[in-house]
Image (tube, rainbow, N blue to C red; front, side):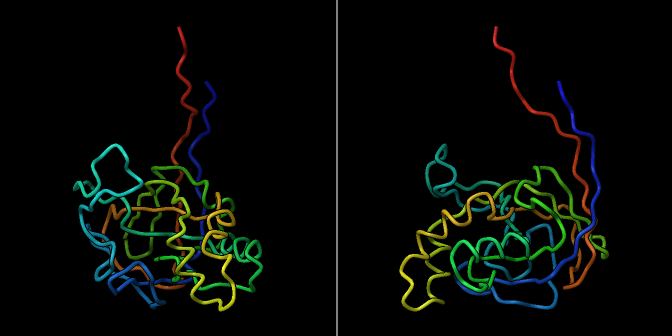
Length: 195
């Protein structure tokens, strides 16, 4: 069995966003307060959430642990998505970002359990990859008059680049420009031996 040892990286918190309204669209803010329930005042805050289309093993609306408290994207991957959509740039808040991270290659491939440590003592624990959806594509398309291809095009353009979701492991304040210390746990590929 091949195992990849633990790894450590540093990155920068390039921008922060808060979804303070009734939906996931977020706006840039200078700082966010993280509690065990997620981001204070954010649409996705809460210890629990209702299951949806991402959890077909539960009846829709079943209460479950909220592992999607924070949505993270990378500056580098957002630029690739924009290029694939043939737009100069786009506002990451339109697709529900809470944090825009700079300096971590292959960001959307960062594995589950990875921890992001912030100067205040706050810690995020990565749950996993956040697959793109046409709902985010529709929100993005609203910024581009005459472009009816973005709603569905976003799903293809953002494949394997949509970022990550995380939950708050330790509360604290995070600020735009913070250095993030990243700890990736040891990894091994799970491949059960067939009898």
